[in-house]
Length: 252
Length: 97
Image (cartoon, rainbow over all chains, first blue to last red; front, side, top):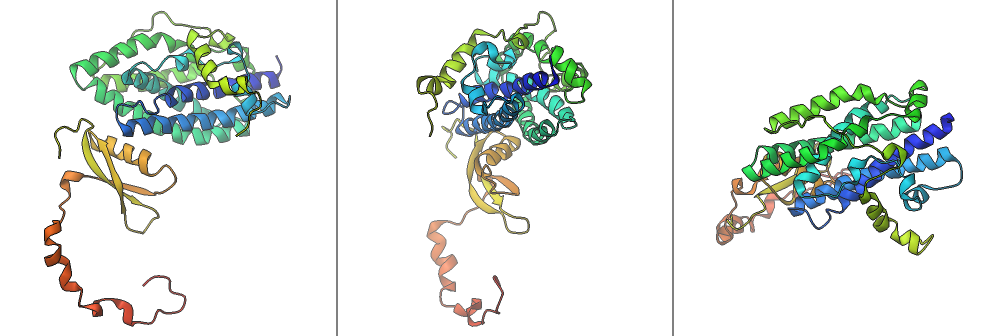
């Protein structure tokens, strides 16, 4: 694998995570528990899709085969996507979405605060913008975890179950392969192992304050780094890519 | 406030568009606590770079004048045009006085 191939794969991974999580959050449009939360969720969706746009644009440029960010978003098949499994999971109830958002925002703050120092200038610049957005997402998800965890008997039980159910998708966030090895050596990528302690600390502090229990690390799901995804990703792409598939090259 | 409202308490939102100028009433939001009120206000009223600062105030904490008192409160100033600085010539180049 060349450095260029590794960089293409890495930027796809970052872009796809933002794109698919953004798509999931956008599904809350008109369905939030309060009008205000509805807008908060779609605001975060826009932050994420904006990040995906920038990252996929750069991926297309790195690849150098004349594809655009839209080609990468709308014309790749499921197996070519490199997003983590956790971002594909269906939204569930509001608490489940909050649990997933806390996990991802805590991961993203650890990741992007390091990527700001990347030797790749484009990744560093996108990361600098992402850090500001993610700080807000983390605050939003933290506050809601506290409200639901330390709320009523029912909200406590439901969000605890959400964290228990989703926990087996967290191990995969830290998996690394040849792509990481090549780019870490170049000073472009971050050693994901080095983020784990901080991520765990954030999660533990928030969950304990919310009177919740941190689930045990037992069995962990895997697959996305190889393009093996949950069944949900196919449904997401079917909806997201429908227009470009049915009317290729359609423009506004 | 109506007890039927299940969306939380009502808060009034004030946005300052630029440093140094007054906070202006922008609208209201629902929220169950002050942190959530601030976040909701941010998400609803500053998405298009409208603000540099936000205040949120519980709507119940606002004391408002009653419409039936408006005669007593506001009419007496109608015949006192000398209270307005309209008799001065605006200095050239000044945008506000």
